[in-house]
Image 1 (cartoon, helix red, strand yellow):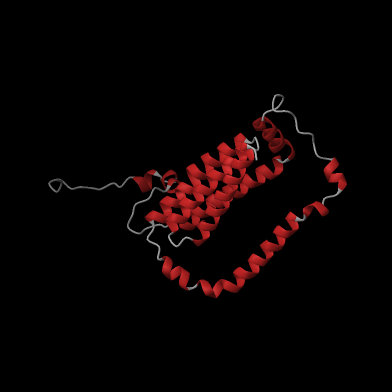
Image 2 (cartoon, rainbow, N blue to C red):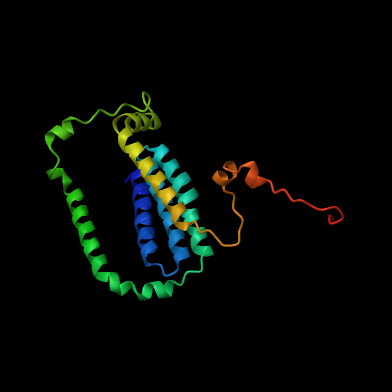
Length: 204
């Protein structure tokens, strides 16, 4: 067994074990920490395959942003997880149905060699050598040429989701002065100035 195969089995075993601990750990903080460990081992698998750009993106985006954000949210919010788990049995049948659907999809993917046509195999583009084309350049060529429509669509979906989350969580509190730009622009001298006729001897 070579050194590369040894690291592959090491990263794969730790990734699967930590992913299993994510869904079985009782403490949600421990689940997030196991999720970070899973991302690290997945990045190691990417490095073994020569996709160093994807490995760095996985560490920077998912570990450095998403997982850390999950950790802060879980630690700062006072969530009663015991109460949440109490009603989990009500949704167990739906969870079983979704699990069976996912299992069927995984079986189809694993047995996908019998469903791939010869035309799709022969139509694959040849992979250039690393000395001619780096992984980052090859990924950019494919992403911004062949899949540019899907890339832009994903960006629009994320933008709409972000705006929707802001609108749903925005709450206007009473007795708090807020700036109304349209109301300020529409003001006239009649509404902005109040003339008071003060008689002599009555001023301050």
